[in-house]
Image (cartoon, rainbow, N blue to C red; front, side, top):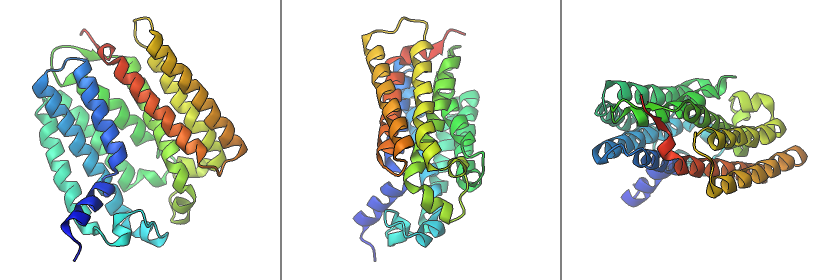
Length: 282
């Protein structure tokens, strides 16, 4: 019998807690930045949290057998802390809550977010093993700011550059996130875009895509970039170039992954800084 505390920690790990926390905090920051209102901000943030939990738990549920074959000891299902059936139940409960909370923000906003979550589920169910593995990340991340801006239902529309930057951020994060497990994934039949490109190309491409997101965030808003934005963008360039150089020269190093995730984190900070510019008058 697994102690309850251990089981709960297993559920947290299986939810992909890091990415879940980052996306949820980004949502909270953007909703606050556009002054969506207290109730809307709470509803939007809760909907995204539940959506992220459903995506993380469904990923580990659907990958349980594959993870066991390659001995992924970092996975709760492999070490026996949480069962695949428990993750399936948790995923569907979170998904149901996500749908209810999403539509509490209105039909338009709710549909945008449900589509984003459905896109993420499509990666877990099928697309992760195809050349289109990048597409759910582009769609889901791109729809996130659109959902946040639509939620207050005050006539404002999402800035096009925000959707583009978020989509690039999603694709770059996908490429970088695959790097540590690219051989294990390939050994179990996963043949997404990164696996087809190979470790060296992905180690170079991931930071470049994330750098493109940073550039869009820098030049997209109509306001002139202040010193903080320029500083973050400059640091992004340095880290992205370093990741690309190391990836090209030493593709098996873990440094490109760490640097790329650092670039992704900087892109998130840059988005938070320009949050008031995400929504435009209708």
